[in-house]
Amino acid sequence: MHNRANLRHAHNGRQDWFPARRYNVMAVTLLLLMGTGLRPSVAQNNNASESAASLSPTGRIVFASNRDGGPYRLWMIQADGTGLRKLLDHPHPDEQDVDPVFSADGRFIIFSSTRGGKPGIWRITAEGTNLERLCAGDQGELSPDGKRLVFRRDNKIWVRQIETGEEKKIVPDNFAICSTPSWDPQGTQIVFACRWEAGNSIWVVSAEGGTPRKVYDRKPACGPAWSPDGSRIAYETETHVGTICPDGTGNRLITFFGGVQRFPRWSPEGRYLVYCQGVSEKGPWELYIIPSTGGTPMRLTEGGSDLNPDWK
Picture 1: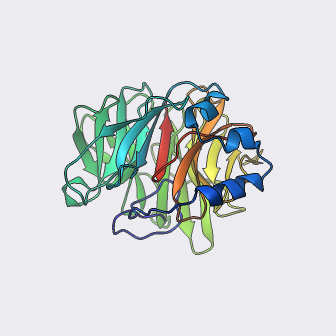
Picture 2: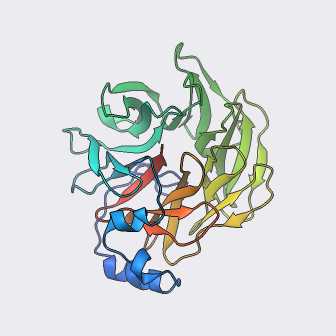
């Protein structure tokens, strides 16, 4: 599982805490993209807003970045590449904010942070105000009705009632290393990744708990995210992004380019995916947008390392 800060670093989907790295990779990235057959005038365009605008996406994308030279903080950008701004600042140089996820109505953002010296799940408004700590853990996501929080703690998946604070572990004890939970649009099921020695795989479990059902394990896979209409799940392999039906059928590779593609999330209407691309699994990462059925990707950001996007 990937780890930021001082937690362990291995493959797990939404990045879990790792120290910032800086590399000069523009020339290498261009060579990798040229080797994939992408249109040079689009995929290699240094103007991020023009590249993204070629796909005509709309909405806001929140992500974590170290682009200002400090620790990871939350940033926001319009899906057409305009309006880049830091969403939330923090004076402590050793505390990082990562894993941002919008609420279903777009009013709030849930994120993981080491504020206070230990991993916790926090909530702010989409404007970056009313900062509030919810509980210990990381990789949180609000249910579609906003009343429950699914998250990871001690490598297990939990659901917490926002109003009462009541919590329930929803995966069996033999599911030892779980990560990256994501709600279905109805708020009744949760997709997540689990890792054993043989590799990572994708599973679905009832939001009330029970026996998980396997979706995919033919390649090491993690970082699942349910589409807005519930018909498909996006996920990452060790190097690429794919989508699959919740019943395990219809597996489709979406990215097959040079470098590494990870952290896919859906656009609000499901027409596009935003994901991160790096020269290697160590990054640094840039955000790209691609049609959710596959096609030519458009670069959205450059500079620093940009991770964990979510779209509303």
